[in-house]
Length: 278
Image (cartoon, helix red, strand yellow):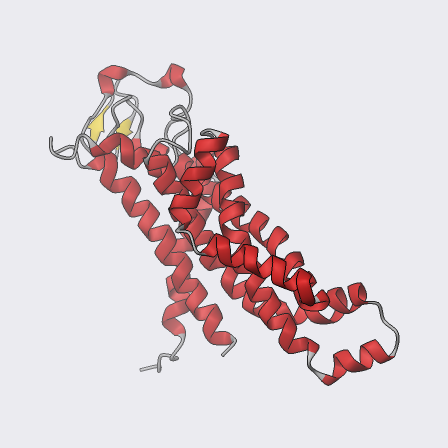
């Protein structure tokens, strides 16, 4: 028998995440129904169990239907798209804000460094969910507002990680040589320090994407995220929560499984990436 390599299983573990992301990308072609098109919904097909047929007989609800007659499989595929986009936008925005601030703090030092880090410490002292709730209470609900709240919650992680790595690099001989050659601080930061900050940032970014997806789902579950007409996974879970005791588990459980699989897949993939840098 052929021997199995020690790191074969993490590569295989990528497959469920890749399948979920690919299914979300091709949702308009893969989903049996457009759950956001109100014209195609029929309240007579509401809360049908998995495997049921529509009243017209043209659609089979493989995962059942929700309280509005939406096909759950279609709703999950489209809802996963929203969760992924919001998570990527929130974490990407946090990185775009936090990385430059971390570089500035490390390069300039002094009061600027102290000011940026104290603001970051103050932000990190509050639970992420509490801070997001306060911001959304001021901004109002909506996916765009959720993205802004995620950026405000996550920038400090990227700033602190970048600053810590940059401070290590600033103490090395090649930076001293670059300064001796008369290179300006901006060029040193972009061409010499930033590339060496990328490995830890590439490990941190997927973790923050997973955290952003989880936080968006929580906010949507509380009614502060995705609109009712375009539900994300969190809102789908919230819509079905009231029907759990009635035995109609599929409305809430299946979106929860999709959310759990996405977050676990990201963490498994990130664990493998982190091992490559150790």
